[in-house]
Length: 250
Image 1 (cartoon, rainbow, N blue to C red):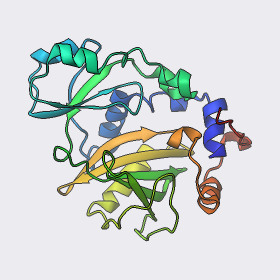
Image 2 (cartoon, helix red, strand yellow):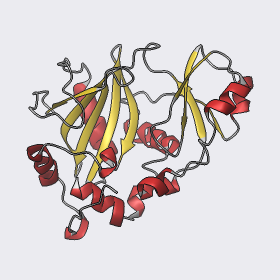
Image 3 (cartoon, rainbow, N blue to C red):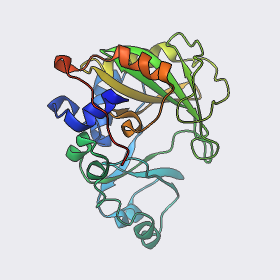
Image 4 (cartoon, one colour):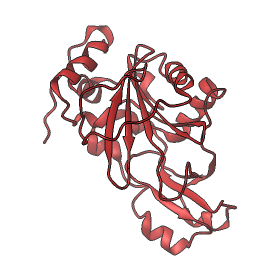
C-alpha cells in the first residue's frame, strides 16, 4: 500500500486524469475493449436530478455521482423529484479528492449519472477486480455480497485460489468466469499505459460488463497481509524509480 500512497501524495501525471471520471471511463472501455465487454448504458447525466422525472427510464436503474465513489441509489420506475433531491443532497457538491487526497478525482466532472442496472434487483453480481501492472494482469480479487455480507477471495489469472484475505473476510469459492480470457484481455488493453491500474468487471448471464477503473485501490488505507502486500509491491515499478512513502491514517 505504500506505493498507492506515493501515487496519492506525489503522482500528478496527466496519464491519471480521467481515470476517476465515470463517463470518461466508459468512453475508454468502448474505445479500447468494446469488442470484448458491454458498457452499461448511460440513461441520463446532469446536475439537476429533477430532470429524471421526464426521462424514459427502464423499470430498474442506478444513480451515482460521476466524480466520487461509495454513493449509489437503486431506482425503480419513474422517480419522485422531491425524493431524489432529498436522497442525493450534497452529491454534486462533495469533493471526494479533497477528503481523500486522490488527485485524479479533481479532474472528474461534478455530475450525476443514471445507468442501466446490471443483474437482478437485490442481487449484485460478483465484482471481478483485475490488478494490472505494466499492462500484465497479475491478480483477480472477487467481491461477493457487496450490499449484504461483503466478502472477498483472490485468484491468479489462471484462476488458482490464493491463500490470503484482504480487508474483508474470505468469501465463498467462485467458479472460473466463462469469459475469463476476454476479461484479462480487456483489462490488459485498458491498463496498457499504466504502471498499475485496477480494472473492474461483472459477469452476468454469460455477458462480460465493464465496471470501472481504479488508480487508488482502497484509497491506500487498506491493511493487507504482509506477503500479499509484498507481492503486489514487487509487481509495481514506480515511474522514474521513485521511492514509496508511508501515509498517516490520520
